Image (cartoon, rainbow, N blue to C red; front, side):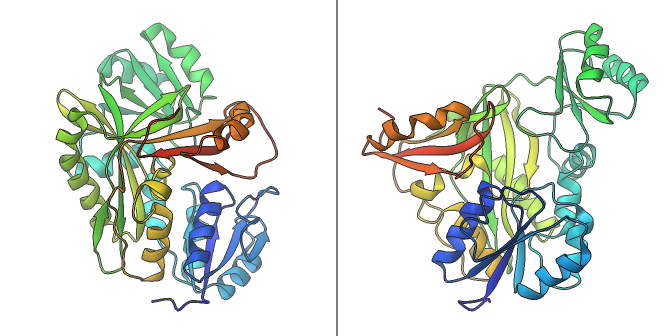
Length: 357
């Protein structure tokens, strides 16, 4: 158990790191962030920050020496970076969870091996393999790069096999995975937190709506179809967490279908669809992640009041902050980013116990 005053390192400099840093400070911890990007909104609220490359071993060693434990704020931290740090300091979650989440093919195979049900999928290492995959899966389908890509990036939709050439060029001819199209009623998230001792708790499932591949809103309560399927989805995520001996917040994204929950992807970190927990749960995903990493008892994940709406502020939406602040029921979070551009998450707003005006 980390004593108050200990230092928790955060790999990554985005808004998730920023909100983790705030939660850590509230529990009495120092935060030391590390990121290669020049702009780090996490560094704005951290006690210390290192701006260096992921493969700068002298700087990484200095970072590890300054920390009592390290965590991550996004899943694309290089696995080699985490492995190097793990030789010097505890990193939670560890390299195995990242390695699985960073490769969509490995992720699907891993989840299927634990009894999960992903969409029908096939490996697409090259253009010829795309034709073979389409012959087996059919269209419509989604072509996704194996690595990287989020918020709709690195993906192309194929309505018919004739779209193959265009889709392949859209993803810049990277190795990929083809997924069969899933007919679903809703998308939803399962957020869990697992402590060092294996204790696991779940937040209520939100129903998620995406726009242009980016999460627009997460709301509670979810419709009945999600309530009927959440136990199965939670059981799968618990098996994943146990198999990985996972510590911290782990998120699974699912499709609610007539045939039950279909696994979409997992994120070994706090998640955008869990931002509502800051005001809408007894203990937020950020505080519980820090509690888990620090070896503290986990907090209650109970929802404080319904309904709950979390709305992302994307691009020019950030200009609505003054109007949102005029709504006494609205909780506004501005991420401190200076570059306003289309598709960029710049903040979010949450309503608890009432609907947005």
